[in-house]
Image (cartoon, rainbow, N blue to C red):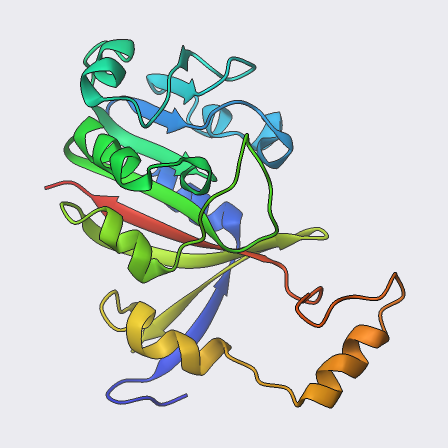
Length: 234
């Protein structure tokens, strides 16, 4: 596909491969925010297992398996810093968290402050997903919106991931073989992903579903899609 200068491709991968690439960036202490073991973070594929041997701290708003420190990411930095012993982290992992916090800008500022110089932050948030309270559900993010939360960090990689019904896929948009961090979330996405069906075709698709009738606003044929961003401190 051509779009302005450069050849645009969608490159498929897996979440396992992308996770391995992020784990390879781990230096120094590691902090996982939202570490309580859940269905989406089974023990055999947890970050704690993947990063075994690293100085690993799990933080969550509620106690449970995988939690070393109980704290709220939106606390004032001084309180959060005290709960973590004043430490700074070479790798911070923040998956499926920011959509659940009431103040995402405050949470993002704290994540930035907790990074060691040169440290890496990995953030994954939903772009398309049904409501899921934990304990509540507030936000959906685009890449461009996510970048607005972290103006002091440099983006180094980004990819989409999809889940649902056993699906485990990741993909990147590349321009001439490389991720174009400036153009992809702004110029390219809509041309690749927007599909417009005539109304009668869309209604026929919904009526053909085997379960109870769906409202025209429901898109059962879309999986949950997440945007994943890797950033680095200066």
